[in-house]
Length: 392
Image (cartoon, rainbow, N blue to C red; front, side, top):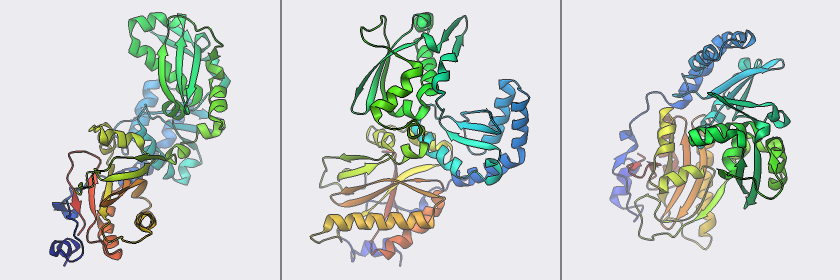
């Protein structure tokens, strides 16, 4: 008798299991990200010398881009990367293009780089700061050109985020001709100034202004110092991709005590290191999920009944149960499972995760449910219209 059969008898739990399908019914991904990354690095080891040769020969950008795409396409549906020579080694910079989903997948990809690759390459997640050298940067767009030194900034910091006002007379033709292109160029410059991750995390608002403001100006070359001072952290921390992954945000909600279907309506409080994913889910958007699924990655959550937890220390027991399940999955499936948050509901407990290979998790969860005396554990992806699947 499976776990789902036990539940249907009503012998172990009075909480209705919302799942209408079992894990066996879940559609398997033909090429999960874990497998794609393995294949990609194997190919990279065999062929990366060609790319190094092109860099040394100062080949054209189209030729280098084509070779780079060929090397990275086994892992990624879309390639956003830059390469270059850095002393005795070469840099492979995995760009995020403003997409937080790419932070997690690129960090995972970097963590699996074989030693043969690391002998020649620095694998970097997110564009890096060029420091004071940013003043030497020049942007050319058709007949217009703008130097980084021509740009004046004013910063307004509040609650750990910054609003930036930008004035640049030399950029006016671009602003008037194509405002979106102007912003794209400005964001590229900011990526090169404070690093792509800091730009994405801390810049809350960016706008061009028609006249300089009547207060001290901040140049692009001084912007990193401005960030370091206001955020009270080092430049190294601002550029550290792993730190951003470990930044958790706590949240509280107004729970619906009657919600028992696993759509997160009963949640009281939770925490997450992937806040944009939460915002997409509650805003009924699927941009991040679509971006992840392109590369064979699934983000979702396990949920399970809390009606067996009854004592004066109920809150502690609920957290202990979540930690125990999470720890078992992390230890058993370090290459397939990544914890990104959890939540406590009136009726249900929740474990949020990224699956680099969901097939492994499908196989592991039923045994975990049985071990902890749970009548069922269900899974749902971070799409509002998704179905629930129950472990058997």
